[in-house]
Image (cartoon, rainbow over all chains, first blue to last red; front, side, top):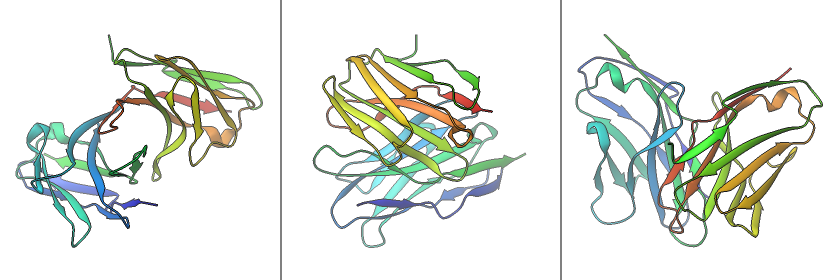
Length: 114
Length: 112
Protein backbone atom coordinates (compact mmCIF):
# COMPACT_ATOMS: atom_id res chain seq x y z
CA UNK A 1 0.00 0.00 0.00
CA UNK A 2 1.08 3.55 -0.59
CA UNK A 3 1.71 6.17 2.08
CA UNK A 4 2.60 9.84 2.33
CA UNK A 5 4.75 11.65 4.87
CA UNK A 6 4.65 15.40 5.32
CA UNK A 7 7.71 16.18 7.33
CA UNK A 8 6.62 19.50 8.80
CA UNK A 9 3.35 19.98 10.64
CA UNK A 10 3.77 23.77 10.81
CA UNK A 11 5.84 26.18 8.71
CA UNK A 12 6.05 29.90 9.58
CA UNK A 13 7.37 32.13 6.80
CA UNK A 14 7.78 35.86 6.46
CA UNK A 15 5.72 37.56 3.77
CA UNK A 16 7.50 37.73 0.38
CA UNK A 17 9.98 35.03 1.42
CA UNK A 18 10.22 31.70 -0.44
CA UNK A 19 8.73 28.54 0.99
CA UNK A 20 9.11 24.80 0.49
CA UNK A 21 6.67 22.28 1.94
CA UNK A 22 8.06 18.79 1.98
CA UNK A 23 6.32 15.58 0.94
CA UNK A 24 7.73 12.07 0.64
CA UNK A 25 5.82 9.04 -0.50
CA UNK A 26 6.24 5.30 -0.27
CA UNK A 27 5.05 2.91 -2.95
CA UNK A 28 6.37 -0.17 -4.70
CA UNK A 29 4.72 0.85 -7.98
CA UNK A 30 4.22 4.04 -9.95
CA UNK A 31 2.00 6.71 -8.46
CA UNK A 32 0.15 9.90 -9.18
CA UNK A 33 0.84 12.78 -6.79
CA UNK A 34 -1.27 15.75 -5.73
CA UNK A 35 -1.16 18.86 -3.56
CA UNK A 36 -4.36 20.25 -2.08
CA UNK A 37 -4.90 23.47 -0.12
CA UNK A 38 -7.46 24.07 2.61
CA UNK A 39 -8.16 27.70 3.47
CA UNK A 40 -9.73 28.40 6.87
CA UNK A 41 -13.29 27.06 7.15
CA UNK A 42 -13.28 25.71 3.62
CA UNK A 43 -12.97 22.38 1.84
CA UNK A 44 -9.89 21.22 -0.03
CA UNK A 45 -8.96 22.61 -3.43
CA UNK A 46 -6.58 21.02 -5.92
CA UNK A 47 -3.35 23.04 -6.27
CA UNK A 48 -1.55 20.83 -8.74
CA UNK A 49 -1.00 17.24 -9.78
CA UNK A 50 1.67 15.07 -11.31
CA UNK A 51 0.43 12.29 -13.59
CA UNK A 52 3.28 11.84 -16.06
CA UNK A 53 5.69 13.80 -18.24
CA UNK A 54 7.62 16.81 -17.01
CA UNK A 55 8.68 16.41 -13.41
CA UNK A 56 8.16 20.12 -12.71
CA UNK A 57 4.49 20.83 -12.30
CA UNK A 58 2.98 24.28 -12.08
CA UNK A 59 -0.25 24.93 -10.24
CA UNK A 60 -2.52 27.73 -9.22
CA UNK A 61 -1.55 30.79 -7.17
CA UNK A 62 2.12 30.63 -8.22
CA UNK A 63 2.86 27.26 -6.63
CA UNK A 64 4.94 24.56 -8.27
CA UNK A 65 6.16 21.10 -7.28
CA UNK A 66 8.87 18.80 -8.50
CA UNK A 67 8.52 15.04 -8.73
CA UNK A 68 11.75 13.28 -7.78
CA UNK A 69 11.43 9.55 -8.32
CA UNK A 70 14.84 8.64 -6.91
CA UNK A 71 14.14 10.48 -3.67
CA UNK A 72 10.41 9.59 -3.70
CA UNK A 73 9.58 13.21 -3.06
CA UNK A 74 7.10 15.78 -4.33
CA UNK A 75 7.97 19.04 -2.58
CA UNK A 76 5.81 22.14 -3.03
CA UNK A 77 7.45 25.52 -3.56
CA UNK A 78 6.57 29.17 -4.00
CA UNK A 79 9.20 31.88 -4.59
CA UNK A 80 7.37 34.64 -2.71
CA UNK A 81 4.46 34.06 -0.35
CA UNK A 82 1.59 36.36 0.54
CA UNK A 83 -0.68 36.66 3.52
CA UNK A 84 -3.41 35.00 1.46
CA UNK A 85 -1.33 31.80 1.26
CA UNK A 86 -2.04 31.12 4.93
CA UNK A 87 -3.70 27.70 4.84
CA UNK A 88 -3.18 24.01 5.42
CA UNK A 89 -1.57 22.07 2.61
CA UNK A 90 -2.04 18.36 2.00
CA UNK A 91 0.04 16.06 -0.15
CA UNK A 92 -1.78 13.03 -1.55
CA UNK A 93 -0.86 9.92 -3.53
CA UNK A 94 -2.64 7.21 -5.45
CA UNK A 95 -1.44 4.28 -7.50
CA UNK A 96 -1.44 4.95 -11.23
CA UNK A 97 -3.64 2.02 -12.17
CA UNK A 98 -6.92 0.46 -11.19
CA UNK A 99 -9.66 1.86 -9.03
CA UNK A 100 -7.42 3.44 -6.47
CA UNK A 101 -8.25 6.11 -3.92
CA UNK A 102 -6.27 9.07 -2.70
CA UNK A 103 -4.20 8.64 0.44
CA UNK A 104 -3.51 11.93 2.20
CA UNK A 105 -0.63 13.12 4.33
CA UNK A 106 -1.20 14.66 7.73
CA UNK A 107 -0.97 18.22 6.42
CA UNK A 108 1.34 21.22 6.83
CA UNK A 109 -0.01 24.43 8.27
CA UNK A 110 1.60 27.39 6.52
CA UNK A 111 1.54 30.62 8.49
CA UNK A 112 2.64 33.86 6.81
CA UNK A 113 4.20 36.42 9.11
CA UNK A 114 3.66 40.06 8.03
CA UNK B 1 -24.33 26.73 -6.43
CA UNK B 2 -21.44 24.64 -5.15
CA UNK B 3 -20.43 21.53 -7.10
CA UNK B 4 -20.52 19.45 -3.92
CA UNK B 5 -22.97 20.43 -1.18
CA UNK B 6 -22.86 19.06 2.32
CA UNK B 7 -25.59 19.45 4.92
CA UNK B 8 -25.60 20.37 7.70
CA UNK B 9 -22.51 22.61 7.95
CA UNK B 10 -22.40 22.26 11.71
CA UNK B 11 -24.08 19.84 14.08
CA UNK B 12 -23.95 19.15 17.78
CA UNK B 13 -25.46 15.87 18.88
CA UNK B 14 -25.60 13.76 22.00
CA UNK B 15 -23.87 10.45 22.61
CA UNK B 16 -26.00 7.56 21.42
CA UNK B 17 -28.02 9.54 18.91
CA UNK B 18 -28.31 8.57 15.26
CA UNK B 19 -27.23 11.23 12.83
CA UNK B 20 -27.05 11.51 9.05
CA UNK B 21 -24.76 13.72 7.04
CA UNK B 22 -25.83 14.38 3.49
CA UNK B 23 -23.88 15.07 0.32
CA UNK B 24 -25.07 15.96 -3.14
CA UNK B 25 -23.09 16.81 -6.26
CA UNK B 26 -23.74 18.43 -9.60
CA UNK B 27 -20.47 17.33 -11.25
CA UNK B 28 -22.06 14.27 -12.85
CA UNK B 29 -19.31 12.13 -11.35
CA UNK B 30 -19.78 8.44 -10.64
CA UNK B 31 -17.37 8.25 -7.72
CA UNK B 32 -18.09 9.63 -4.27
CA UNK B 33 -16.16 9.51 -1.02
CA UNK B 34 -16.52 10.30 2.67
CA UNK B 35 -13.43 11.43 4.59
CA UNK B 36 -12.91 12.41 8.17
CA UNK B 37 -10.39 15.11 9.17
CA UNK B 38 -8.82 15.25 12.62
CA UNK B 39 -6.04 17.64 13.67
CA UNK B 40 -2.64 16.09 13.07
CA UNK B 41 -4.11 13.05 11.33
CA UNK B 42 -4.98 14.49 7.94
CA UNK B 43 -7.90 13.01 6.01
CA UNK B 44 -8.88 9.39 6.46
CA UNK B 45 -11.24 7.52 4.16
CA UNK B 46 -14.45 6.22 5.74
CA UNK B 47 -16.43 4.85 2.77
CA UNK B 48 -16.42 5.21 -0.98
CA UNK B 49 -18.70 4.38 -3.87
CA UNK B 50 -17.75 4.01 -7.51
CA UNK B 51 -21.35 3.88 -8.72
CA UNK B 52 -24.87 3.61 -7.34
CA UNK B 53 -24.63 -0.14 -6.73
CA UNK B 54 -21.08 -0.10 -5.38
CA UNK B 55 -20.25 0.60 -1.72
CA UNK B 56 -16.83 -0.02 -0.17
CA UNK B 57 -15.33 0.37 3.27
CA UNK B 58 -12.39 2.67 3.76
CA UNK B 59 -9.73 2.55 6.44
CA UNK B 60 -11.97 3.70 9.33
CA UNK B 61 -15.50 2.46 8.60
CA UNK B 62 -16.36 1.08 12.06
CA UNK B 63 -19.29 2.97 13.59
CA UNK B 64 -20.38 4.41 10.24
CA UNK B 65 -22.67 3.38 7.41
CA UNK B 66 -23.49 4.94 4.04
CA UNK B 67 -26.25 5.04 1.48
CA UNK B 68 -25.91 5.91 -2.21
CA UNK B 69 -29.43 7.03 -3.05
CA UNK B 70 -28.62 8.21 -6.57
CA UNK B 71 -25.62 9.10 -8.66
CA UNK B 72 -25.68 12.56 -7.13
CA UNK B 73 -26.36 11.67 -3.49
CA UNK B 74 -24.22 9.90 -0.90
CA UNK B 75 -25.15 9.98 2.79
CA UNK B 76 -23.09 9.07 5.83
CA UNK B 77 -24.76 7.82 9.02
CA UNK B 78 -23.54 7.43 12.54
CA UNK B 79 -25.87 4.84 14.04
CA UNK B 80 -24.98 5.63 17.65
CA UNK B 81 -22.71 8.64 17.92
CA UNK B 82 -19.81 8.65 20.37
CA UNK B 83 -17.53 11.55 21.41
CA UNK B 84 -14.49 10.31 19.47
CA UNK B 85 -16.50 10.75 16.28
CA UNK B 86 -16.24 14.49 16.83
CA UNK B 87 -14.46 15.67 13.67
CA UNK B 88 -14.74 17.53 10.38
CA UNK B 89 -16.33 15.37 7.71
CA UNK B 90 -15.80 15.88 4.00
CA UNK B 91 -17.59 14.49 1.00
CA UNK B 92 -15.74 14.37 -2.32
CA UNK B 93 -16.37 13.29 -5.89
CA UNK B 94 -14.14 12.28 -8.76
CA UNK B 95 -14.48 11.23 -12.36
CA UNK B 96 -13.65 7.68 -13.42
CA UNK B 97 -9.97 8.45 -13.84
CA UNK B 98 -9.79 9.73 -10.26
CA UNK B 99 -7.18 12.30 -11.22
CA UNK B 100 -8.59 14.98 -8.97
CA UNK B 101 -11.23 15.17 -6.32
CA UNK B 102 -13.79 17.93 -5.77
CA UNK B 103 -14.55 18.47 -2.10
CA UNK B 104 -17.54 19.87 -0.29
CA UNK B 105 -17.15 22.55 2.37
CA UNK B 106 -17.37 20.03 5.18
CA UNK B 107 -19.63 19.24 8.13
CA UNK B 108 -18.29 19.99 11.58
CA UNK B 109 -19.78 17.38 13.92
CA UNK B 110 -19.54 17.56 17.70
CA UNK B 111 -20.70 14.65 19.83
CA UNK B 112 -21.26 15.56 23.49
